[in-house]
Length: 77
Image (cartoon, rainbow, N blue to C red; front, side, top):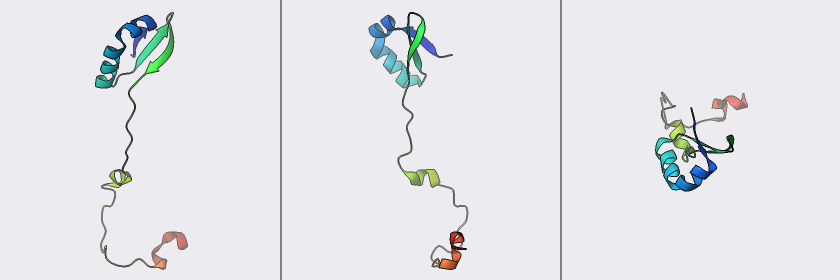
């Protein structure tokens, strides 16, 4: 279950709550008169290097120095 805190409590403990969210990764719901108004959560980091996503995807490559001809491309067939 996501933690909830009122606006007044959030105002008093904002820095402490930010550090907790950053450390645990758990989101926090800020309420106003018992109604949820805001969700505060850590930003998900994305891969910046596309090669990291491809790492390990080539299982076998027999002759890496052989030239690639036009007949080798499936899209041209």
